[in-house]
Image (tube, rainbow, N blue to C red; front, side, top):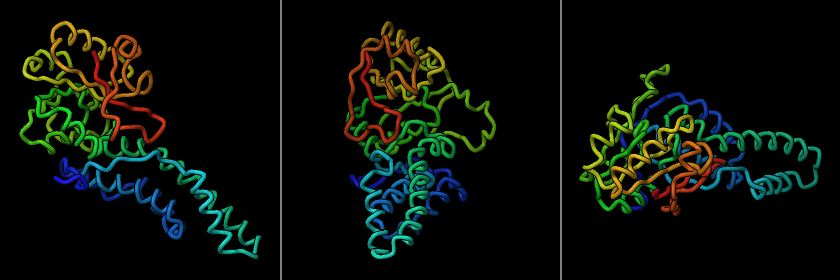
Length: 276
């Protein structure tokens, strides 16, 4: 696989109606002559399209309408109506409202990924390539795998590597469970049960986007320290933020890694850590 080819993790959702995507693309015609805005819309919409088709998307920049983009719109209007300020002001009023709407949509991409695809942590092709290289083919156990995007990507990128994905799947108790199925095989078991079953068989344990509503992550860290001290633990989440318990962050010894292709694109500063 070359560096520009996206990783196919499965079939995707194949949704035919995605309101978020339709709304975002509705602004493309109005801004077709403004390259920076058009590129922002294209970048974000392509993420949705890729995941829907079963492909892990590209890395994202920080998603927002910047001052430079606003300036590009203003220059466009001045060039269009250089001697007609009333028409220019009217067009600016319309386009500035549209810019606010676009800014809101791109800043809330993660909400759309959660709503339509149950992807909480952003899993891109470049990140999986980096992570797979870092893992160097060692057997991996993923705890709290959720819908399995991380494990699916690793399995697709290196089919010979042992990747065990587990989750207690409490989300199955929520409505519309037929819409929210894992994208790869995820064994239904708690983190503690997964460690007991597979802890001795793997070299690396991964915990991505553990919930901040319980201290299960802290309990798992203590078990790993006491019973599996030779295993490497990787945690993906936001320090003292949207993921993991406060006590976990307070007690964990953190070493940030793999920042090249895994960094924030919105207000959630998720990172990858080696944890002791």
